[in-house]
Length: 173
Image (cartoon, one colour):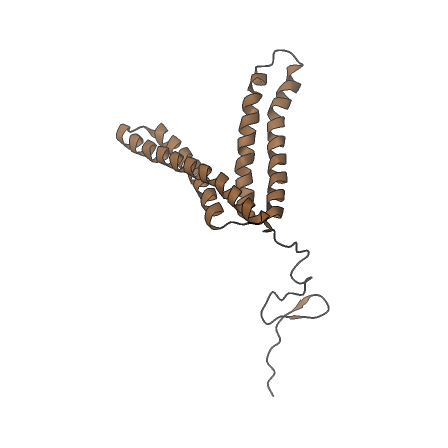
């Protein structure tokens, strides 16, 4: 097995628990819809929409990693992992979120809120770039417009010294 295959299998192994967790959330959402209908409670419908949306996203990302593995699926999976990192760091810093009573704790509150956000963004960027490089699924970079690269955007258009020319009309003789 080469490094790309091992990375793909590891990413898929991480995606499967997210997919199972998503199925659980979809189940809870459907149960909330049923309970909302039986109890005629509008609040349960709001909760059902939340559970169904988040569960659907988790299932979709897991499915994408299992069936359509590529650079986009790696970015989505690392986004989920970055969100998990954000939640963990936020939980660790939650004692700092107390109500500020003095002028000094605002800086502490700012650090407690911004540190998880920036660490999750950094984690997402670095991990997705490394995993995409390991699997070799990155698309080559293209610069400029299609006309700059000499590509024809219209099937009958001709490229001449820069701008695209309109198609020529047939000449009658």
